[in-house]
Length: 333
Image (cartoon, rainbow, N blue to C red; front, side):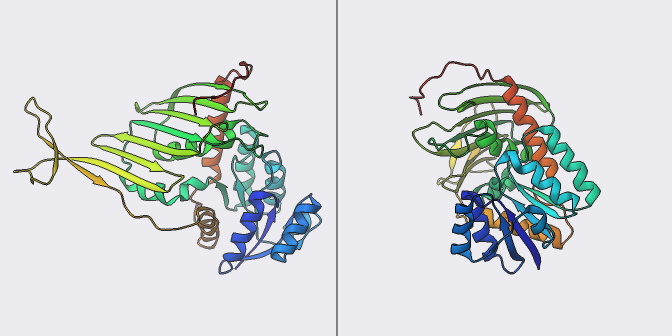
């Protein structure tokens, strides 16, 4: 049983607290720290757990911490935990700057502890079911659109939303990056609210990503194209569609969908697959995976290095964006 404390009891922090209590087979939730008296009282009333006066006071009582503070505080919280040799779960984006992430990597290695980054879409059942099909995608298109919510506007939409898809793509495409181009516009915030990025990889794969937090509808879809296959992952509705092609051998079944390619090439049989996916809470799954990585002394499924890489690419995209573009109203989404 791992004793854990939560740093941050805002909207997402309360969700983590509830799920950690449900994971009582692996975690003992010792308490939490939050600067807001209103947030703290709500947590005490709803969950009956102890509020600690300082991070250090809580760290001394636990084996690991769950950092769910605003992004700007991630680094300081994690540093304090790592310097006390505590395991750390830290929400995405892992830190504000790439240098901070690199420093955390150094501290984690010195402390010989586990650090997992909260890229929750890795645990989305639609993506997990898609992984076996994703052999070598060569074109990827993602759309992550959200209606405006002031929560999260402390960072660019690249760090708020697009970073989810960056982590997914970087986990799938095993290649270095050759070129990045991007554009974005700050519409209602001080940082970009809508962004498009194109990433060209050394192996020839191209990824085209769009993220918006000023849309009229919510969408979280990724489409992967590879030799003889198209894989569509709907992260929002948690659905997977796979279209595959196989060579027709012998006489085609009259009920098969067959694509005749002509020019003497063998016909292709088209196979459609839309598997039934299990009901699961992705945040609960990632927290459980964090516990298992500690107890089994294994590398976490989303290690600190992966979070740092996604952050580094995100900052490269931000550098390409002219944030001084004129303010506009997005009527297309």
